[in-house]
Image: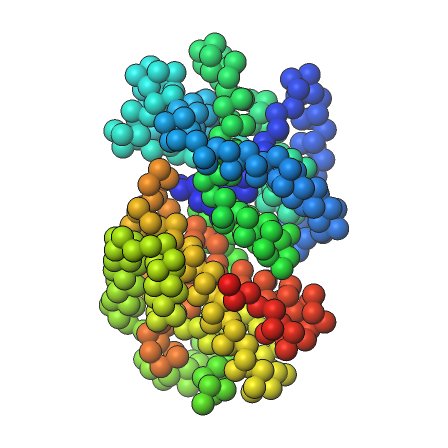
Length: 264
Length: 198
């Protein structure tokens, strides 16, 4: 059970590629990104110059579209927002079940399966969340996590146009998730028809919910690129159940200068 | 193999012994840290439930942050190596400006808890002190994790780091202060003047 906190999710729009681009693009990108991963772990940022340009582009995208959409969504009553978010969460479940199985996480896959079955029926195609009321919380996962479980290193930090912060591993994960999504075969017609639309709307809703915090990161930080990178990488490690780098940084450590001396 | 390991272990313990001797004085007790965070959480929850105006709550939250955090240590960490070359007056000025800046910033974050509550889960020893794990339960959101790292090495039990779903306040504030310094030619006086106080 993971919270979607303001700090965690960047709130950048997830843009779906046209179906015709799916396979060819995937093969190339997978090969390129995985070979790049193989060059070794990067705690540094080898693509920083490019990433910063993309970050500026994404920030403008946010300023022009996503932020206003989020403000609009936040002004709507919960009775409008919640069914959309529920529907978006529900159509994501088949993909999460598949990833759970690929990770050998049978319990997580079972929880998500029950959620999908209950909410797709009693929950009126997913617009309500009776499974949540029964205590079946979504076990969020994705193919990026599957790759991590399989031992693929995170690779370098990337900021993707339109998608926001990522890593080489997570970028591949997003593409693979798109291609292997079993919703087309398992979902009702309405889910496949409106799933993508609901997921885009849900991004605007989340952008609105966490508006102040995201605004402070993107528009009030001295270096919003560096903050976004730090926050994404740490939160992603947390989501994957890995100890974050520097989690136990010690401000009283051996470089310690007694800050109380100057106070006297 | 065994011999060299033993020798290394012996050498290690000889080098470490002054620190080991100092350890009881440093190491904040689990129950002390937990009591601190219990108090912090009770204060935050009391403000949330008080029904006061948002402006009043904000100033209450700032007071709570200031009371429970080791602000001078957080300030010094954010300033990094520049703290070594700064004058005492600059250090005092920076700590004072940072105190308002950080209490406002994170006090404002507590505001997100209005309508929700924080629950203390457990306390455990970690390499840099005691980590007290809490869960924030907010309306309309999945519960999420907030950890407080606590030490008494300032002379009193206080938290020196907040980690929200893996995101570390010390690292985030060092990134922020260093970026501000870079933008001001590493001039601490300009940094002090420009630290947001609103």
